[in-house]
Length: 169
Image (tube, rainbow, N blue to C red):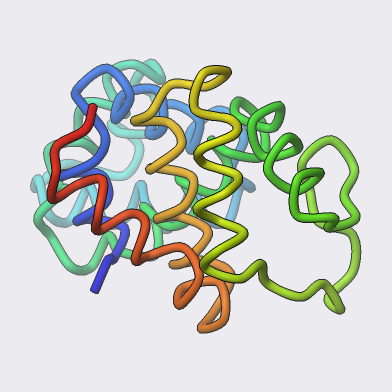
């Protein structure tokens, strides 16, 4: 079972993890960032104001230090979503196009879209593996399974497990 903390620990390398967590601070909404700030302050025994005043890079480092803390699960899920919708949207769009799912620049349009089959996921990975970094593809598939629900999970996670177990980075 993949959760956001496991995805960030086992799939994302240090550089990618920093980019994902930086995306949280850059693109997250104010309320979500306020919750993360309060959680960081409490966990690190800082004042909220101290964390709020820190530069994004420092807040990113502090958030990365909390990878093992379950209370940050939702924050990390948001970070994965923000990263993909803002910085990996070209890859998302390529996969969605391949699966015939309507989208605007990688963001799915409406709630009626059907998840791809496991076979369609495998086929898309085979087709797009030369175009996109393998780790980024696995990160996307693991995140889609986590964030998009059971049908996506059943389609994407077997491929994620296969690649991770084989360490095909």
